[in-house]
Image 1 (cartoon, rainbow, N blue to C red):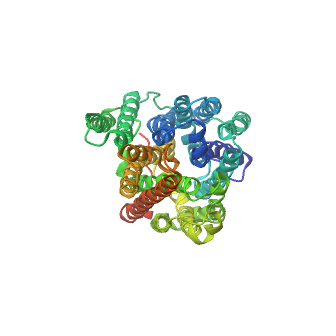
Image 2 (cartoon, one colour; image 1 turned 135 degrees about the vertical axis):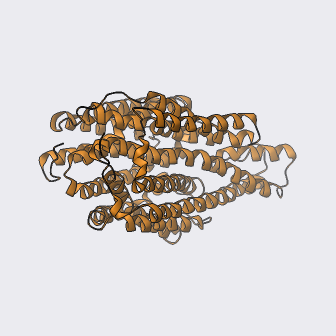
Image 3 (spheres, helix red, strand yellow; image 1 turned 180 degrees about the vertical axis):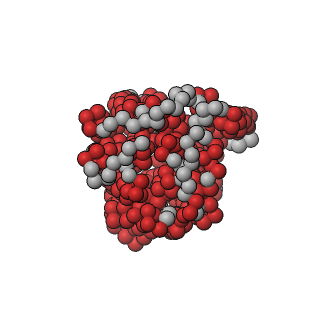
Length: 516
C-alpha cells in the first residue's frame, strides 16, 4: 500500500481531515461534561438521566466502533469515514433541537452510530497513509492538536452554558463536520485493503451491544432499587453471559469484529489493558471534577472550563515531543511514567475539600490538574503509537477500532459504576448528616430522596430557613465526600494502567501481524 510523507500536500490534507473529525467528536464530549449542570436544570433531568445521556452515546460507540474500523478496512477508509461524519452531524443537529431529556438521549444514540464509523477512520487514515518512519510524529501531532482543540471544549461549553446557549455545543459540530467532508471529498484518495472479503461480524456486534447495555442498565438501577433486586441479578447475569457469548462468537467466526489473534501480541494486549484502566479513571475523574466545580465550589461553567487550560498548554508543548520520543526510544518507559503521573494528579485532586471558590483555584485544584496534564501528555501519543505499531497496516482500522472501543467501554463502565457508587457514597454521607437535623421523619425522607440528583440536590420546600441552610451545606459536604472517594478510585486505575505497561509492553515486541 503506497504511503505519503507527512509534509506532502496529501499528507497534510489527511492530517487536517482527521484532526477536524476527531476534534468534533472530542469537543462534543468534553464540552458536554461542563454544560451538564445547565442542561440538568433546563431539561429537569435527574442524576441518573445525566449518566444515561453520557452512556447512550458511549454504549453505541463502544459496541459498533469495531464494526466501523472493519468496514473502513474492507470497504474503504475514506468512504466509511465520510459516512460516519455525516451521521454524526445529523445526530448533533437533532440533539441541539431536542425538547426534553428522553429525546436527547435517543439522539445521542444516533451520534454514537456516526462516531463508531468516524473515529476509527481518523487514526486509520494516518496509520495506513503516512510513511512508517513518520507515523509516531504524525500521531503525536494528531494527539497534540486534537487535544488542544478538545480541551477548548470546556471553555466553549462553559461560555455557552453561562449564556443559556448549551444547545450550541451540538450545533457547532455542523460547520466543523461539513469542512471535514469537503476536504475529504476534494483532496484525499480512497484507501482500502484490496482482495479481502467483505463479510462483517454482525452477530458479534449485536451480542456485545446487548451485553454492555444490560450491564450498564444494572449499574444505573442500583441507586434506585438497591443491589438485592431481581432486576439487578437478571441484567448482570444476562450481560455477563452475552459478553462470554461474544468471546465464543469471535473465536468461531471467520470474520470476527475483534480478531483475537491480535491479542497474542503482548504489547497490543498491554496497551489495551492500559487504555481500559486509564480511561476509566480519566472519564470518572473529569466528570466529577466538573460537577464539583460548578455545583459545589461556586465556579461558573466558563470558569470550570478554564480550569483545564493548563492541561491544554501541557498537551501543546509535550504531546508531539512524546510521540517523537516513542519513535526514537520506544513507548514502554513513557507508558509507565505517564499513567502513574496522571494517577498521582487524580489522587492530589481527591484531597481538595470545600474551597473559597475560583479565587482559591491556584492553591487547591491547580497542582492536581498540572500533574494530571503532564501524565496524559506523556501517555496519549506513545499509547496510540504502541497500539498502531503492534499490528500490520492491513489491520490498522481494526486496531484503531479495538483501542477506541476499549476506551469507550471503559467510559461506559466508569459512568455506570462510578455513577452508582457516587449516589451510594452521597446517600451514606447524607444519612449521617440528616440524623442531626431537627426535622420530622417525612422531611428526612424528602431530604434523602434528593441524593439521586447529587450536586444538584435542592432542599425540600417547606423547611424553615435555618434548616434549609443546614441541608444545603450537608448536600455540599456529602457530594465532596463522594467526590473524594471517586477520585481516589480513579487514581488507583491510573496506577493500574502504569502497571500494565510495566508488565506487558516491550519496545522490541512491536511486531507486525501478518495479513491472512
